[in-house]
Each structure stands twice: as structure tokens, then as C-alpha cells.
Length: 223
Image 1 (cartoon, rainbow, N blue to C red):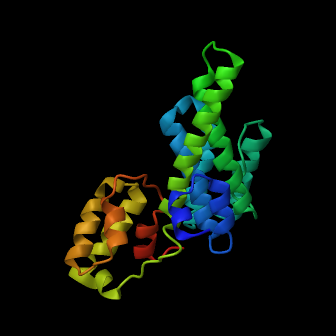
Image 2: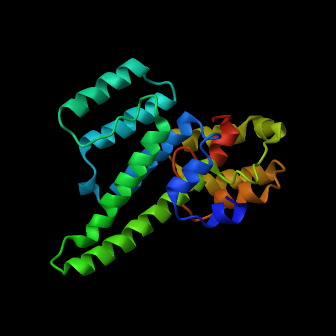
């Protein structure tokens, strides 16, 4: 895969496979969680309470706020109740990313096929919306992984500027999912001397932003 293909790709499995060796377990799990949250925003009825609980405990797990044993006990309880949920805390985060990504895209595509229409039209609409959902998931992957062909570097001076304002801003955005503050973070970075066009553009851009945002993670030293 070339840089241009990465930036324009609309095939999440291809991107995941390409980035397999560089992706951390944490990034893969956060991508999977983001897929579910994106679906919930589109139509809350398509995401069960159990699935949202799994997302929440997975997000706590990747930050070390719950033990592996506690997470597995909870998820197994949900699973054995018959909930249609995928276990996120296991030894196969890449598998989880594939499954959650495809499953949520299928659910979203099914939204437009509820009304009475011919089977041919249903198939056409489903195919269109499924690929649109996959395209959104590619945006999520670029949100989490950034551009692997042009990785950005942090100047340590940015982190100490103004008494540590930048890491404090990044931590608040991360903990509160306050992505509307990213332009404020960009302003602070610029004041601190950052001239990295990719970092500044990402913070000021209109794209999808989720927990695991590559800029916020970079500033917080997360991987």
C-alpha cells in the first residue's frame, strides 16, 4: 500500500492488514470501540446496552482502570446471557477490530432496508450503504493510526511550554472525549512553536475524532 492508497482507502480490512505489525493492542481495541460508538450515534436502536457496556469497560481496560480478570468476568457474563456482543478483552485484538468493524458496518447498512421495496433495490441500497459505512471506518483508522508513511514527532519543548499547558489540554480532551477543544490545542501548539502541518491540520480539521486520536496520543505518550 502506498501513501496515496492509505489516504484514499475505503477498505478497513486492507488497512488493518497493512498496519498489522505496527498497530498496538490498545489502538485496535479503541478502533473497535469507535466503530460501535459511531453506529450508536447513527441509530441508538442498533446498539444494545450490553454492547455499550462492553465498549465502556474496554476503554477503561486499555487505560489500566480495570484488571483483565474483571473485564473477562463481566464480558463473559454478558456473552452467556445471550447478548449479541463480541468479547473485546481477549488475546486477539486484531480479530476484534475486524469483527466489530464489519459487524457495525453491516448493521448501519441495514437501516435503509427496513421499508417495503423489491429485493433488488434492497440489495443495491445495502451495498451502497455498507461501503459508505466502511469508508467511515477508514476515517476512524486514519484518526487512530495517523499517516504511517509520514509520522510526526513531538518536540519535548512543547510539553513544558507555559508550565505544561499542552499535555494538560491533551489529557482533558482524552479523559472527557472533548474533541471540540482540539482547535484550542492547535493554537497552543502553534504558540509553543509547532510548525507540523499534519498535527495542526488534524486538530483543526472537520473529520471524525475519537478516543485514540493519534495527535492526542502522541502528546500523551500513548501507543
